[in-house]
Amino acid sequence: MDVIHMEGIRKVYDTGKVRVEALKGVDLTVEQGEMVAIVGPSGSGKSTLMNLVGCLDTPSEGSYTLRGEAVAGLTRERLADVRNRRIGFVFQSFHLLPQISAFENIELPLLFGGVPRKKRRERVTELLDKVGLSDRAEHKPTELSGGQMQRVAIARALAMEPDILLADEPTGNLDSTSGGDVMSLFEELWKTGRTILVITHDHALARRAGRTVTLHDGRIVH
Image (cartoon, rainbow, N blue to C red; front, side, top):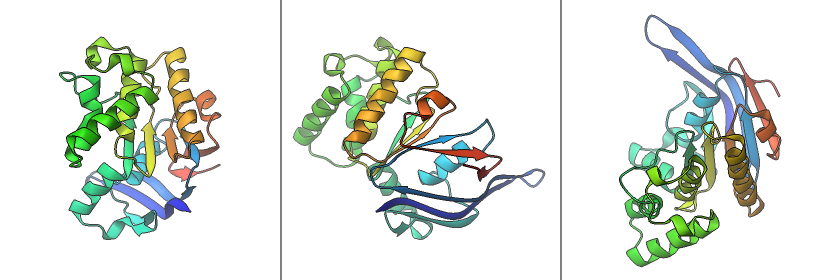
């Protein structure tokens, strides 16, 4: 089953003075259980594509269906629900709240999703174990290494059991060893049936995905 199906996606940014066509007719299909790496030079449209897939932005033209549901027809409230429940985001800069613990950071989506306290605690404990950080539950982000912070971010992204995990340069702020560890975690998740889309500039990491899609100047070239 297709989780992501995009046809003829164009995205134009028009400020009145400058008109930039970031995506120029992109077709992309990602099936359930695939791990796809999106690669390309700076300015190729990778982040724009990620924002559209993650329902953080809307295309200028073209159609996008997420698990068979047309995104264009969704209300603002439904889009917010989709972003919280069906898409897990992992960013280069982690986006963790520094004043609360790893446990509490992972718990946030469950809290916003109205999950009862007992189930929240069970789920967070399970996720901390999954990412190998059970002994760091009470540590704040400032007390963790970069690799550990990214694993907390991945656990948080998985909290609501999303249909798809979107990772935008997830190893960009990490050294090669930590980056390799994070990519190994994505591979483990993929083997359990997760659907994962990773944007990366690192071709060595991209080769560890099941499929690579190359963007250049707003178009898919491979």
